[in-house]
Image (cartoon, rainbow, N blue to C red; front, side, top):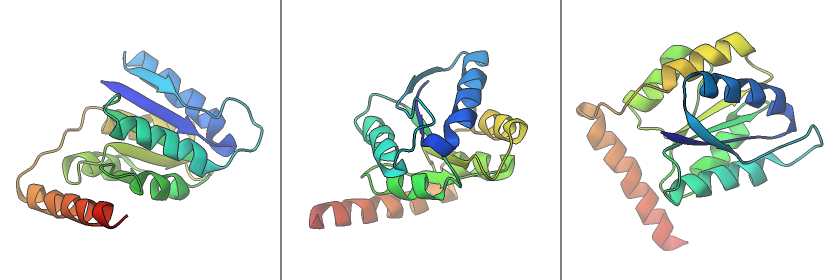
Amino acid sequence: MKIAIGSDHLGLSLKRFVMDVLREHGVEYEDFGSYSDEAVDYPDIGAKVAEALAGGAFDRGILICGTGIGMAIVANKVPGVRAAVAHDTYSAERARKSNDAQVLAMGALVIGRETARKVVEAWLPAEFQGGGSAAKVAKIEQLDEKYRKLG
């Protein structure tokens, strides 16, 4: 598995911690910024990660900002990308198993390091289960395709 990871300046410290967690689990990743605590606009970083994922170079993405919400909104604008904010293990796991979300978004001002570790560790091994959720995810993909054509 190869993960694209990025944060704004508010998420920088938590991103560095999450990268340590990924290394502990032997997960390959690429850091798309931010690289310092200098203020950056989260849409710039979120777009880089989501576009890299949509381009097929990565299997999944992790985005971290103050709340995770802005990053998720940005990532969800990129065709083919499904991002979910998760601050607990159940939501992180269900984002993968039920919604086939390839991007995990977290808020550094919302959760601490150990909770983030648990969230990432729940999200990493989780795989889309299909079943009853497959038709729902297919509808999401149809909407994606419909509005992609309009753009």
